[in-house]
Amino acid sequence: MEAISSLSCEYLPFFVRGAAGTELVEIAFTVPGVEPVPGDWTVAEWEPGSAGERGATARILFGPSGTTSRPEGTWQAWVRVTAPPQLPVLPAGLIDII
Image (cartoon, rainbow, N blue to C red; front, side, top):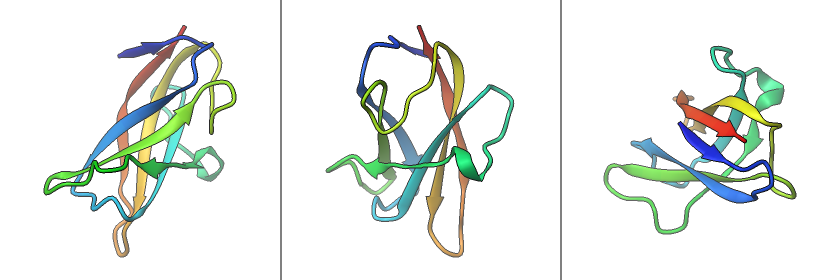
């Protein structure tokens, strides 16, 4: 589990196997054990220069003044890639906000 301060604003990276790094990518944060619903998703971006043969790294600016934030606690991260006809929704680990 990754821990970050509730005062920190930083990019959180998530490697996506098989991604080209050109698709629409979104990230959601939920209570652990709960799947995201449509309103949970936030548009993210691909980390510049991260695309390769095995995939690419999605990222989102997380924290105060970032693209999204969450209060202190443990959150499940999810990544969704729109790559028609595929629409994978991938659990991406736990984030501990302290």
